[in-house]
Image (tube, rainbow, N blue to C red; front, top):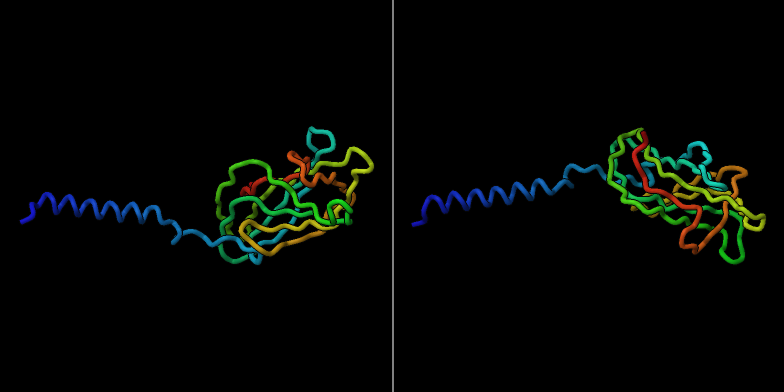
Length: 173
């Protein structure tokens, strides 16, 4: 014969364990990831920073789907332009350090990533991209729009601290 206290304690332990497991399983309620087909790409105005030869551009991803979706991380960003013999026609941007958090985009809502642009200081460093190519986090297909006319970039492929880089995605204010 099993004492009632043991049966009661065992029952509470099982219910508690199931409750904790259910509380930790948020996947049933999470919105799906924002795929390329659910996002539109645009840019904000080019703004000047306090640093010489450095500007910033808001890269904006807008949820164009009828359902909420989730984003987290950094967009992959490539600038495409004239072929440079040493590096080729594509400049893949480095990521700014940070700790990007997951967030949900409602239909019509936007997320922003700051693209910091290092301008050339010498004429031989002048490179004028033609296309901005963006890969949303966890996606394999890209979105693209024309690059900003007359905005040159200093290519620093392989630099450990390049002047041109991309920041993490955040919900737009």
